[in-house]
Image (tube, rainbow, N blue to C red):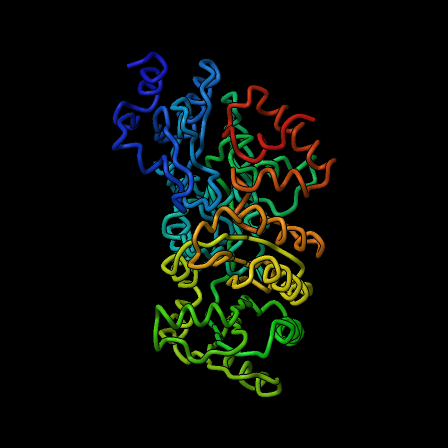
Length: 466
């Protein structure tokens, strides 16, 4: 065994250093099977001290590091390159609960814990951790933090940035930043933990986090509604906010094309097909029946195409399963050019209309699948059939992206709302991000990782030199 690998094995134990291709293969391929790498090895440390020792070793030997959580990135943010010289550090063994404080509504967990495990720990304590993602059974807290994950309840609770009180981070040189504070108010200098949230492992490796908890809702009111168009959907969102305030937890929209795709692969499960479908959920303390009646009474005053209300937890879960099946359903139907974009909610109707017009003009016969978290402006905007039979779709990706992103930024939006940038969108970020912001990002990278060993080849690398 080469000296570097022998030293790594001595730090974490030989059984936790994977070197054989059959053992490392799962860590070398991204979630969408778009990026294939070849790691030098995969290290699975079991403590922050082991992570620190590994990073010190990597610095000494000039070995690049690719942090990897649940490997659910959709933009190649956690995939090594094909050089065979990068060490993947997987965090699945760092999965312990360190502390839970229900009086303070906070919890401290290690970065390798899955989101579903964290949700369950909170629920067992009579609390809610509100982040909710389709991949919650496999995605890990470190990855959620590194991409500033959003999900289904951002409208009420915010992204991971808003849910984070403190972090423990190992810097590229092996020093450990100890900031696992559970304070909600602290004005003692710059909030340096924010640098690592959304950095996709390029500034350091998150090993633990202190996160906010919330009272566990006891009442839910969930409805699947039909509206005449996206403008009507956004008008409904505004009216719901006015009527129910922060009890409005979720507001999801799906185009008719989405509904037809769901009906194709899940026949008989949709309650109806309308020009646009809206999934609304309210949550509160108290009794579900009372909250449901309030929603029913209010909806009776609105102009809707159709609607159904969940009267039981089983019915509520069935409605949610339709929404959560959207990504998997589209995958079954074939490849698509995916966008995880964000615009102000008020701009969604104009963006949708203008982008459809531009794409249809450029690619007659194009199919647009638009759905997502309209309550916070985040749309999953996916394009298929730029050519007949969807042949050579990805040859049109740059042209499609140029149209979509130009309109996104015309409406003061972003090309990465919740999935991160990874190695997929770095060149687009360089094109659209504020030049001074890019300069500051480069400076921070140079300060913390002057040797460029933390997750190279991802978006900070794509920014290039000043």
